[in-house]
Amino acid sequence: MKKTSKVSKVTKIPKVINICGLEHKIVYPYIFKNDSDLLGLYERAQACIKITDMYMNEERPEQGIKETLIHESFHGIDYMVCSNTLDHDILTDLSIGWYQVLKDNNLFSYKSMPKKVRVGGFDYTVEFPYVFEDEDSGWGETNNNSLNLRLSDSDTTGKFPDEFIRQQLIYLVTCAIVGVYCSSAFDALLPFGYGVYQVFKDNKFEKLVKNN
Image 1 (cartoon, helix red, strand yellow):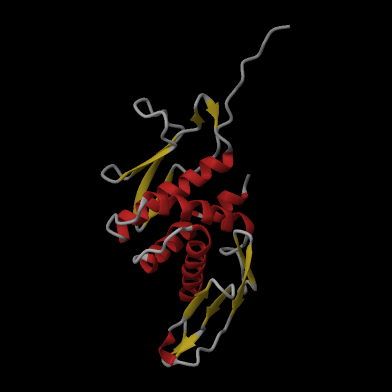
Image 2 (image 1 turned 90 degrees about the horizontal axis):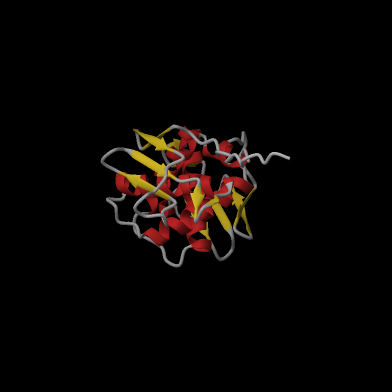
């Protein structure tokens, strides 16, 4: 019987994504010749992300490839809005955490506010609309001790637009991910969370992750 060669399955990922208004080309599958330990690489000057489908001569799982895309996109957000200040290990924790959250929830396809968001092994209760007793408390709060995400729908000036509320939810979930997955917090959490919202929404990352 004639042997048939094994054909590598190539995961479908976007060819171009938008990070903070700038289009980035995705080169996949890419072979790293000088550093075989690399899974992906963000190149700022070329506005390019390179991702390999192989590691140590073995095919990478689809989930790992998509998590790498999230990770390298986070490097782009870091460059664009955080002045390249975030530690690589933090970005790794965040991308692993966000992969899980995108897989287990429906944060970009809901019509009404979700009642629960699963982060790691924890179910966070979404309290919306939440009325803050102190008007200066702001529009939202993540409590990693009581596992609550609290969101207001208005302030003294009136009702918040729906897009603003959805953006804030993603920021609060990012705060929860930091509490569950990351060993330390970081000062640029607010702009980073807003960048996450833009990248995931504009490039339909939730649909991409769920489509395994």
